[in-house]
Length: 203
Image (tube, rainbow, N blue to C red; front, side, top):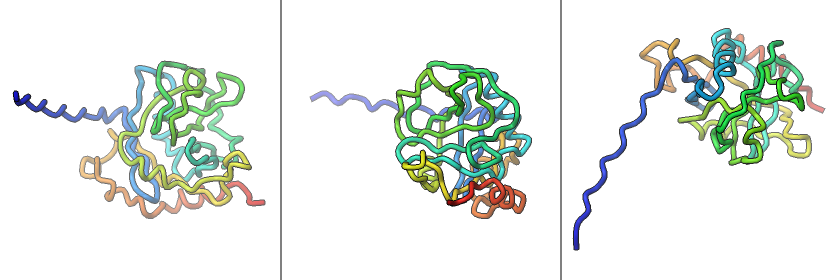
């Protein structure tokens, strides 16, 4: 019996810090890899908003178990945005578990600041929404985001919030890759107050 040589493990791909996002939740840090080669305008605008601190404290207002978790609305009810639309950049990206994509209305060019993370493979979204990134670590924390009522289109009465989002290249080297250095377990006062203001009213 011939013994076949064991293939050497593939080296871990180095993350491009300028196109990576640290998304801090109360549960831990999520690392996102952006794909500017697939959606350049979307990625550029997304990073601009992240650097402005736009997403800090915003709630996950629509979360459907096994489907997706949506955020990015300062109003907290799915009707708000940054006030600047982004034209659709539909591409070959697949809406598999962990994919990052822009939310929009029936107008294909209505994407703004709202985005969602896919919780379960959703091929019916392919080519219909702008895919622009993927979760490369911390998906277990995304899974813990409080779910909404499917009978109310996933609306979450008491939603979780984003503690902080940062472009990885802007983060101090001692903190890069260290989820415990972010203080993710405690939201900044600014973020906490913003989350309360943006939360949808319970009925």
